Length: 71
Image (cartoon, rainbow, N blue to C red; front, side):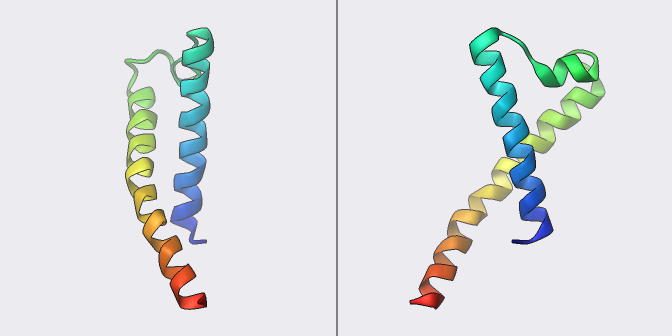
């Protein structure tokens, strides 16, 4: 697994846990850690999570390529 894939996975876990907290408790951990949901740092984290989700779409196809070469 390449380093960019690991970074994307980490950011997706952060985003997933954050959304879980928002859904269950109405608590936005990223906003709380970064000074509010409108702060520049929070917005950067949100954008990075979104970009990692887009990047991770490619992982579906990479996995299929690996399976095809092993068969």
